[in-house]
Length: 221
Image 1 (spheres, rainbow, N blue to C red):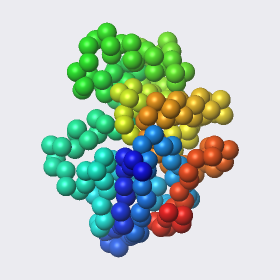
Image 2 (image 1 turned 90 degrees about the vertical axis):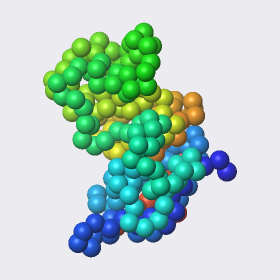
Image 3 (image 1 turned 90 degrees about the horizontal axis):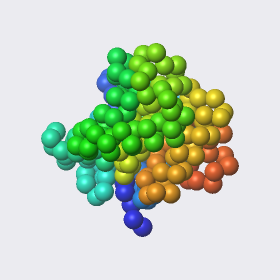
């Protein structure tokens, strides 16, 4: 198997003694669309934070492209994140910047030309149904529109791994289907997608692997 990600016996404990994850182990193949589900408080968001190296496990190890994340230096973490895209529940947009500027930021960091940045940003905004909204300020958008901008920003640099935390939570059925189609297109192009959701409708007919978390434990490794 060609694994892009391996999670090995990961436990995460918060003070004073809250066990958010308990001996979680699984591996993800390159180009896989993996769903992680479970009730609120099951540990889904905590797991994604660990995969993104926003936090470290209390015990256990996570390997991304065979590199142990806990062993990365502070200087190496930004390079790791350039190979990942992340859609957060709270969007983390720059509210006083335009839609275009928010999405372009990920490409400017890579040092792409102005022309290439413009083409990629406009293409991805069209894909998420925001064509023509590029000059609008983020703070003027609805929750669903902000969610789609966050998604566009996460995928515009064509990451090796995309982590999405409840990426369709504010979207209607039509937009949800468009976003899921975008994820499937990314997978077809070789991106690995890990999608955390409590919405079973997203995966019930998709015939993809589903991991179930409950109270920090993985029920079906």
